[in-house]
Amino acid sequence: MSTRKGHSPAKKAPSPTHPTFSARRGDFYSKVHERANAYFAERGIRPNATVWQQIGSVLLILAVPALFYPAYVRGWLWSAFVLGLVRAVAVLGPGHSMSHLGLFPKTRTNNIGFRIIAPLLLTTGPVWRLTHVIHHHLYTLSDADLQDHYPFKRVQPAQPRLWWHRYQHLYMWPLYVLGLPVWQGLDLVRAFGSLFTGAFLDRPFPVRYRIETLCGQAITVFLHIVLPFLLLPPMQAALIMFISNATAGLIVVCQIVVNHEVVPTALESAAAPGSDWGEYQVRTSHNY
Image (spheres, rainbow, N blue to C red):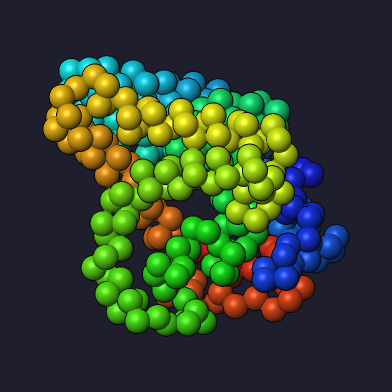
């Protein structure tokens, strides 16, 4: 949850299939904001990264395209592994921080920075805000949480158990490994479809977001899936692409799983209509 002043959950009413939450002044959510801001002020702690952390984050992000040469041109296997590792850390560290307006002091700087680097790392800014900031953080562990992966797998007792879930401990590992290419491919297809439907994942998408998402997803797929095949022999390119994406995907997806899909978290996943959003986040976020 962001502690930046004025940053609150999306005000647009969710569809009837989504749980509804309140964030009224005086309720738990606003109290969390007040206490967090007071904590930072009383101790002189910055709510964003230090200058050195910002410099380190920029260098980490720049290391991703720098590793394209040894991985995609030279075809060195070790560099493909390092590329996947650095990419995953960049996604989970500075990328995730910028998406929550926490890396730089100004909101505008975080927004612009994230929209620039997002296609290099994983997806586009508008898609990340929709699937992560809104669906994941606003509807954590509900049926609308796109990072919960239901019905592919079942981790919540409240979810209906389907016949294939008895095998999920076997088939989910390959999906974790291939998570990023699958994610990017699906988002590219959805981005193309949004040009005609005007919506992405059933939510209205402005024209500028549709164009940005289609171009950004095409760049992501090109950089991390197609580019090796243009520079290396097919078998070597396939191996390099697999090592890089498998490393990054396994780290990113497992981090999501560990943070939210633990037994105490899953058992607290039910949300009554009108539940205070801040309280729900505390109960369902293992890393709160």
